[in-house]
Structure formats: C-alpha cells, structure tokens
Image 1 (cartoon, rainbow, N blue to C red):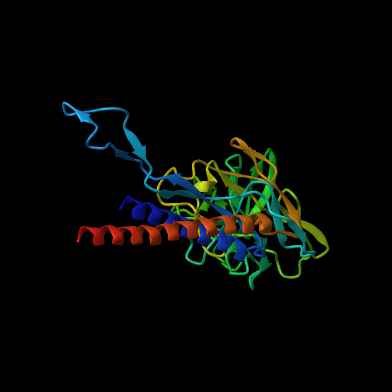
Image 2 (image 1 turned 135 degrees about the horizontal axis):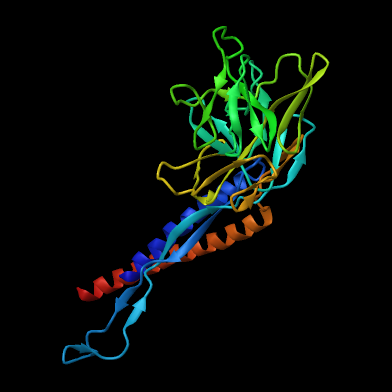
Amino acid sequence: MRILNTAATGVRAQQTALDVLGNNVANVNTPGYKAQRVNFAEALASELRPAELEFNNQPIGERINVGVGAVISGINTDFRTGTILNTENPLDLAIVGEGFFPVRTPNGESAYTRVGNFQQDAQGKLVTPEGYILELRLPTEAMDIYADPEGWVRGYLNGEEQIFGRIVGAAEDEGFMGGPLTVDEQGRPLDANGNPLSLAFVIPEGAEEVNISSTGVISATIEGEPQVLGQINLVTFANPQGLLKGGNNLYFVPQAPGVTGEEWIGTPGSQVGNTTLGNLQTQALEQSNVDMASAMTELIQVQRAYQMNARMITNGDQMWGMANSLRR
C-alpha cells in the first residue's frame, strides 16, 4: 500500500527534524553555537491513472499526480549574531556581524569558528580552550610581506607598515634570518618550499595592558613601551551554508571545489567581496543564537507531525491485514 511508504518517509523526515531541534535546545547555552533548521520538500509525485478510463488504448480525462511523502531537502545554519555577553577578559572576542576566526587544528588543518574565548598557551600563542591556534591570515591587499630576524611578519596594508603576527619558534632558532614571504590563496604566508608557515599571535612573557581593538589590532606594553603585536583578520565566504559543521563549534571547507564560493579575508569592519565583515567586541563572548521559545514551539509541532505519520503506518498496516484476510 502506498500509504505505508508515504507515512514512512514522513517519519524519517520528522525524526531528522527532531534530532536537529533537540540539538539546538541542548546547545542553548553553548557560546557561539549557531542554530540549524531542517528544510522539507515533497517527494517525487507518482502518476495515477485508473485502468478503466481508457478508450482505444488512450487515457480519458486528466492524469492524477499524487505526492509520495516528504524528504529532507537540506539543513541550513542560522549565522545571525547571538547575544553578546560581557566577560571582562581582555582575550575574549565577539564578532558582531559576518565573519569567522580562522584557526589551525593540531594536525595542521584549517578550520573556522565564531567562538572567541581565546587564551595563552605556554609559548604565549593565542589559542582556543581546545588548543587550536588562532591562525594568521593576510588580506589580498597586503603587500611586501617579509619576516624580520626575530620572526615578526611585517608588511604594508593601506599604505601603512604593519606587524601581522609571528612565526612560531623563529625567536629560538639562531639560524633564522628572515626574508620575503609569499602568500597562498587562503592568505597564509609560505616558506621557501611553498608550505604554510606555523604562524600565530604571540604575546611575549611580561607583556602588560594587553588590548585588542575593534579592528583586530593586538597591542601591549612591554618594558614600559607600547608595542603592536599583530593584526587579527576575519574570514567569510560567498556561501557559508556550504561549510561542513564539525565538533567544538568548528566549520570546515569541504573538499569539493566551489561549494562555499569565494573566500574573502579582511580586517574587522572592512568591505570584502559583496559583504562587510563584522567588528570585534572585546572582553565579550557571543552566545548561542537559539531562540528557546521558537525552538520549543517548533519541537512540539514536529513531534505532533511525527506521531501522526506513525499513526498512519499503524492504520495502514491494519488495513493491509484486513485486505489480506478478505483475499483468503
């Protein structure tokens, strides 16, 4: 019976929706979490035409198309900014608007996150609580990029010389001489062999009055002198819905080319591509953007739809059993 297959598709689709909504509710207090939403679509219609409505082997009247259930057409992520909570921690950052923080996982893979609860590791690098390094990315407008003998990456942006970050371990390497650097399409400085350098934002030991501006400039007072330590740049995509969602609020670019569209890099608040990157709010964290009231309302609606589809399967099975008993 077609009703069993139709109801089964509804049960599967509503079960997926329940899983997604349940995950949203579970992460209502997770900093930086982005709510997800299931999109439903009608399954491919089946054409029905009663056999007796034919004349000279030709159908009489209009053909009848009947849907055969529901399917999941996609799961979208709501990237709207969540509530901003002040923390008074100078290393906490919230993006107010579009953009992601680029981070690097321990295996060297690039990832992206909206959570800015950074801290210093034993080497003074800015990292996430999981140990992912806040990655240095350079916008395409940056020119004359080079590393000085102490490993500081310098260059020119908008006609002004800037310090962008530091090469990890360069200060301890007596043989490091510095020199010009090339940059790949993702804004990562490369070594002489074309491999991405291990770069980070390093706050030296003894630094005081560490401050991060709304445009991402990291500064501190070192031995009584104010110094710029780096420039945090944000990343966004033409189609952020194409990003793959990972654990720990990370997002990854899929291997299939073109899914996320063009990748843009820029300073917070700058115009990139056809969008404007958000500004940074310091000493603050973005909270989950899950609307608890809306999520619970939708959860009730989906649960009712699930129950109705399950009841259709039960009733259809009973009807099928009655039909089989009549045949005997």
